[in-house]
Length: 460
Image (cartoon, rainbow, N blue to C red):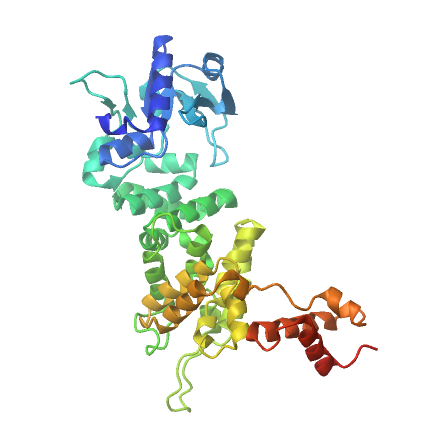
């Protein structure tokens, strides 16, 4: 069954580890998602090994290892690749978990030699199968003690054992159930779904970093719309992103948004996020209109032809986005880019009227390709008019870097050399000189200084 993995370096490294463990008298199999992916005919990203060997044994057997969770029986084994790099394989000892008093991790674990006992602690049946990469022709390579193959056939995500027990052990599994169902285009089985709905309020016991990472995976694996619709259906979104729930039912002017309310519009954007999309662009798509619910203004019945408006929704959206990103503990760099996407997404509406200097400053925003991508999704999820997008894309791709961001003709040093004393006005002077340079009005440093003298007078 594993012949199509033969040219996969990670597979070969993991298989070599299994072989070494077996030769030393221990039980060892592939475990988890790679087995699921094999049965689905999907390329596995990683190959994890489960074994009866304890962490100290594993670390003693292989030349280079790292203890990443020895208390939980997890060791990284590093194997050399043909190109001189290293391949890290996660090797976990069979174990039985004790109580999960914090709803995140077991208080204690007991190592085991029984693979049947080990799989009972795992989350979902489709992730609870084992695979023997060393079997001979005609032998059964899959060990399935939990009904995972049947659930793959049924296209359903189901917990191993009692759903409430599995979620009590680790509340994050509620989000993982949604993510797997969305990514694999499966359903969540009825008992598992009922348990999520009952326990959804406990999701905030999970660290905000883990919630953030799970949401980012949902947004970037190619089925974001389905994932977020399920989050709402199961009552999870109301706790982890209540600001997003407020978009539901907020109507929009039909002449610009024939698709429906703000939630529907946002879901259409998420539907267009392709697998592997940049996390910052994905979060920008989710949050770009997050300020609309707070700024909704219905048509004034006393003004014929008036329409729904969202005055100031960008500024409000920026503040809400900053609050969400800080709560979920995004890095400063990620926050800056996501907020920039929210802040600038409406500027495309003015792009044909922009002065040349303003346009060039706009087009040279960091990662402008993401601004373009968000605008394309925004248009295609509403009126479908791509004229402004086409104009911006053409200008962005045609303009050389030196034209967009030329070497400045007038610098702070030039102003000081001309006799001006450093002051708060310096910023305005430098911006005016750069604007004139970008417009093609100023071609030399002297011309730039002349413009400054004309507007701000001779230096005192």
